[in-house]
Structure formats: C-alpha cells, structure tokens
Amino acid sequence: MIIKEAKFLMSNTRVEDCPAPNKPEYAFIGRSNVGKSSLINMLTEQKGLAKTSSSPGKTQLINHFLINDSWYLVDLPGYGYAKVSKGEREKWKKMINFYFQKRENLACVFVLIDSRHEPLKQDLEFINYLGGMGLPFVIVFTKLDKQSAVKTDSTIAAYQRKLLETWEELPQMFRTSAETKAGRDEILNFIDEVNIQ
Ligand code: GTP
Ligand code: MG
Image (cartoon, protein in one colour):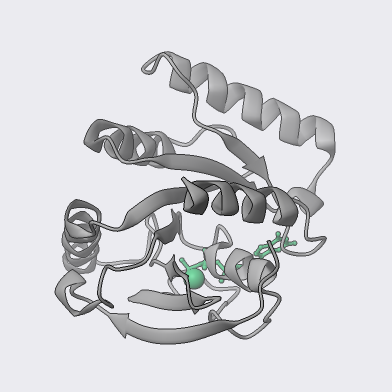
C-alpha cells in the first residue's frame, strides 16, 4: 500500500466523540514508551504526525488519524507507567475499556511489545484481556534496531510459549523498527488485506 495522505483528525477522551465509525480502524496500544507514536510516524512517513517523547506517558488521549481518506489509525495512551497515580490509572482503564467495547469499526488492534524484554506480566494480561473480548489483534515487536536478531528471536519465542499456555492459536506477529523502517511493508500489506475483506 502507498500512503498518499495521512492527517491528524482529533483527540478525545470519550469514544462517543470520536469520528463517525464509517471506516475501518486500526488502533495502536502497548506499554508507555514502547514506540506506538513512533511506529505511526514510521508507517505514514511523517515524523511529527503523532507526538513522541523519550519520557513515558506522552500520549494521553484517543488520537485519530485519517489515512488515504479511507481508514483510521488510532494512537492510544500507553499502560504500565509506574509514576502514574492510581486515579490516573483508573481513568485510563475506563477510557480504554469503553473504547474497545464500543468502537464498532475496529478492524484490528496492534499490541506493541518491546522486543528487548522477556515477557512482562502487564503485556500478557493485556493480550489476554483483548483475546477474552474476542477482538481481532496482532502483536508488533518494536525497537528491533536496539539489539541482535538472536535476542529478538528469543523474546518472541518466549512470548509464543507464554501465550500457548492460555491460547490454542497464536496471533500474527510483526518485527519492527521505527529507526530502520523494518516491518513497514509487512504491516501496510496486512492492513491492505484486512481492508479488502
Ligand atoms: P507513550 O505515548 O508515552 O505511551 O509512548 P509511545 O509508545 O507512543 O512511545 P514513543 O513513540 O513516544 O517512543 C518512545 C521513545 O522510544 C522515543 O524516545 C522514541 O524515539 C523511541 N523509539 C520508538 N521506537 C523506536 C525504535 O524502533 N527504535 C529506537 N531505537 N527507538 C525507538
Ligand atoms: Mg505515544
């Protein structure tokens, strides 16, 4: 797929205020700082489209981007940032829960995982939550450029083992780097295929 146009539409806290659900939507979620906003910029080839930061907790709202006038990309705030207060965490949970329950045009959720770390409880819990709701999702391993391919392979194998303890089938998995653009064609082709269905 060629991205001819990518534009920011709006930021919301409430799913009711999001754009009319008349186009397929792809949402990016994962721990704070995992690289959600960077991946959106890499896919769209627009460096400043989604706001990124080296300190976690940058994205706070549900951010909609319109791609090629035909589908939505959504940048969501991350989970698992230790410095967030209990009240803030509850607010995040509520907002995200509503979003996933009510957003009827969700075509697929991209769950981002840092390829440098062994399986983390928070990530496994989040994947199990999505799977439990029956939402279509894939896993995206990020920051490939930060370590060797052997290390990435071992992280992915460890996640596969963990997920097979709960699920019979594994979701599709992608390997990406916002720095080298690894995984860009694979993800855009995947979105193309889902859009055609
Ligand atoms: P929140 O909005 O805070 O939840 O974070 P986020 O998941 O949107 O992460 P963001 O894209 O802001 O990236 C966090 C940091 O990781 C930034 O300093 C990015 O430059 C860096 N980063 C993201 N992706 C990559 C990558 O593929 N490779 C490298 N080397 N750094 C990356
Ligand atoms: Mg972000």
